[in-house]
Length: 220
Image (tube, rainbow, N blue to C red; front, side, top):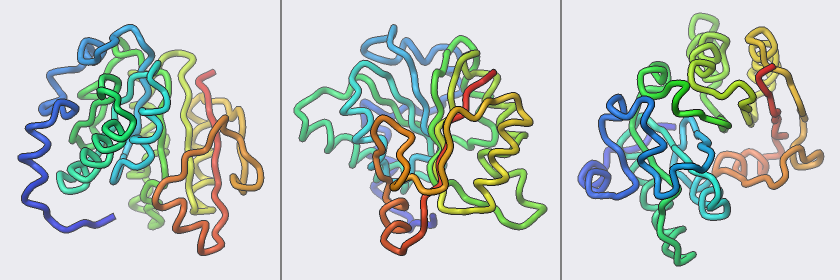
C-alpha cells in the first residue's frame, strides 16, 4: 500500500516507548525489551496501519508482539492506532514493540535466541509477475530466512485475498518443511482461527465479495 509522506511520523516514532530504532542491535536480545521478558513472542510482518496488531496485543497480554513495516508514514499510523487501543483499554503497552526494517533482510534483526513462536502474514503484496515472485513474504526464499529465528515448533498464520498467491504459498510452505495444519478458501464461512481479527484490507475485500483464503502452517 502506498501512503503519503507524513512529516510527523519519524519524530513521533522516535519519541514513542513502543518503537525501537536500529533493530539490528537487538538481534538475539528482543526478550529483554519487553516488560515481561519470559512471555512467548509473536511477530507480524508488514503491519500496515496497525489495526490488527492493536487489537491482538491488547487482547493477549500474556504474549509479547513485534510488528514490522518498512515505511515511516505507515509505521507512524500503526504507532498511533496501537497507542490509542491501549489508552482505550487503560493498559500500559508493555507487550508490544514496533520497528522499521526491510523484511527481505529480517535475518539481520532476529535469531534463534529470540524464539519467535508465531509469524503473522496478512495480505502481503502478491507480486504476480514471475520475476518478482521471490519478493513474496511467503516465498520459499523468505521462509528459509524465517526458519533462522522461528522456534522448532513455530507457526505461520497467513491470510490473503489472492487465489494464485494462496495456492503458491501452500506449495512454498510444504517445500520448505512446513506442515499445513489448517487451510480454507473462505475464512468467513469456514473459520480456522480461534478468533479472527479482521484487517483493514480484509474488510475491504470482503465487502467486495472476495473470499479470504487462510492457512496455519507449522514447522515439521
